[in-house]
Length: 240
Image (cartoon, rainbow, N blue to C red):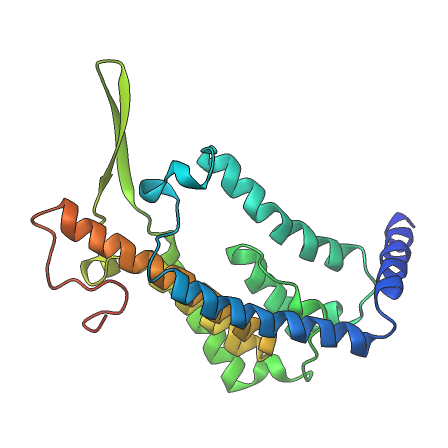
């Protein structure tokens, strides 16, 4: 009963915001295109400035924030919004198998968008070779995202110093940003499986931001470590 009551409240909110589902979808499409525009803006901006986090932190953008706290706050809306839509709305499409699989893929990484709440797929979409292929790619490539920078801290004369060590092993033998490559490929696979402008827009934005991080890390390693492999690329093995 409580769930039905919550669903009624959420449906009433959406009814107040949008006069029809067509209008709601139109707004989502506009937001997707706006995301592509923002990706273009970010691409130009990141040619001249690194994202100010971690080793690139600077006080000119404001006071520092604990990394774990900042990451939690940043990701929390991305979890709560789609979770609320799935649990407390009465959309029939979230009960369909194709949508559920996309939602599962969505939550397996970390929730970023809620397009599966609105997307419409044929009943046999999950058995289509196209969907099966990209689902396998998504699962396999997601393993790359488990790699992360290896670091250690030590105390010296009462001062704690954070030291970054270039990661090695696996795809890190070929590119400096193996974790970024994995995440980009993962979301490209999700975009192909989702087959919508919304998932494509997010994949493009992700690729722009993470590619810039990979390039920044690669340049940093080359400057800070004399023995860093010169043949190793930033993001794409043997190419870039």
